[in-house]
Amino acid sequence: MSNSSTYTTRFPLLAKADTPAALRTVPGEHLGELAAEIRAFLVEKVCATGGHLGPNLGVVELTLALHRVFDSPRDTIIFDIGHQAYVHKLLTGRFRDFDGLRQQGGLSGYPSRTESVHDLVENSHASTALSYADGLAKARRLSSEADRDRAVVAVIGDGALTGGLAWEALNNLGAAPERPVIVVINDNGRSYAPTTGALAVHLSDLRRQADGARPESNVFIELGFAYLGPVDGHDVSAIEEALHRAQDLGRPVVVHTVTTKGKGYEPAERDEADCLHAVGAVNPATARSSIPAGQSWTSVFGSELATLAAERDDLVAITASMLRPTGLHPMQEKLPDRVFDVGIAEQHAVASAAGLAMGGFHPVVAIYATFLNRALDQVLMDVALHRLPVTFVLDRAGITGPDGPSHHGVWDPSMLSAVPGLRIAAPRDTVQLAEQLREAVAMNDGPTVLRLPKATAGPPIPSLARMDGLDILHRTRSGPLDVLLIPAGPLASAALEAAVLLEDQGLGVTVADPRWILPVNAALPAHAARHRLVVTIEDALRTGGMGTALAQACQDLAVPTPVITLGLPTAFVQQGPRAALLAEAGLDGPGIVAAVLAAHPDRRPPSAWSATTLATTPRGRDDHH
Image (cartoon, rainbow, N blue to C red; front, side):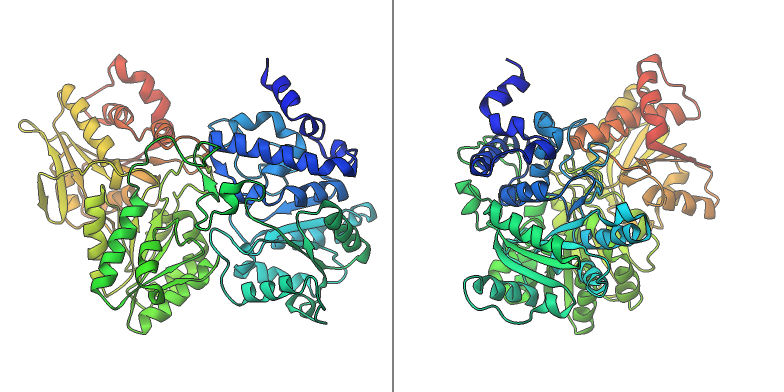
């Protein structure tokens, strides 16, 4: 039996309601049964592939109501962040494609313009939906009369509503009664963790007033919105009624819905630690993986930071609503007064860290590498300009895997290389992570950065010697020094694999770990001068990072050795397994060998390597000199 017929048999209502038009024909008395089918389907499929489980289970009825009231894609429905858009995908023609969710070549884990006309916005960074909605409403207002009747609906969680960008948009939307944007708040009291700050308290007060007298005003009314709610977010008819009222008002409206994250799936409903916000492949009966979990880089960092903080009273930590995902939970348990969760507000997190540093503390800002992009101005002007001792620990640096182009942490070295006085470390293993974290927090004359991959920690990679701050990991025992391989961080293992393969080709190879990759160690150009070819290998864009900086340093010092930079292309890399995507970019052992043999002045690639060379070289290398 095909997957399609199996789906039809096991999920008959969902199979018939997999487009918005078909959904609107489902009788109201069957919507509860349809919601139950959707939840069962999500638990089965997301537990098989991994993905955002808790958020999607919580918005089943809300999404049903949205697609029954509004005519997508004529009406525009924007999901902020997008990790709660799986139900939307099911109801817009992608029901039968879910076996490929977050798999290479399969469905994205976020809205995707290439997948469906119902996905106008391909967003997966928080707090953006209201600004998109503001711009779309302006465009509709400036267009034809027919366009003015097209609704603009933005769905935003209470967690994403803590972001400053959301409030910039609310400030504009509330002052424009001629632009009737409908803001639907999906209020479950959480993002990755319980929502923090004054807004969380205010929404909690509004939730408690659901059955009693409502105040004449609240923050949304004061900003110029009509306010409808709180509405039971698991009652389709109640949500539909509120959405119809919002449409009829013809002005900016906030519809405040209250939902339960993980609704209908017991392990997710009682998941206080939000471990089921996003899952890998797990057993749906237990929500636990059958594969023993290795020690992650994140957990090692968390443990080391908690130890350091116990030794030093001046260490504090900041996160932007990612306490557990960035490893700060151990320190928060031991020293709660010195860990600050500022909500989804990366700019504020960094500027606040600057204030803490001015007050005599050493802040450690733990954040995903891709999210630091949002606070570059604060890194540059609020921290670096003042030469403040702030340490940034960038989790998910480099290729992250199934979350796709918005979550790969590949831009930070290129951007941060332009920040004066900032130093970037890339530990090759967790032993170096502990050592370099201590080095970073000991520096008091400017900002420091540690890049950590989303990966299971491998075994330690010992060095033969430390010379001028460089760790020599491998050196051919005799003969000429043909090739100097300089890997950044955990790509040291690929460089060591390549070194063995290159020695089999008769080349003499040195592998040197710079440990601190930017700015360039002053000793590296001298090491480069003793070799005939230098190859840098980094899990980041190949332009503007470590390799580019070393090539410039060699040029400035008239070092004639050519520098080949291997890295990731200036492109949005799609989802896929980390190892596969690195190999595709030529950042595994064979890919490095192919690049060396193609570039070495005395070598042409043997036939055994030519196919690999042709496949990887154009995407994964830059030639300097």
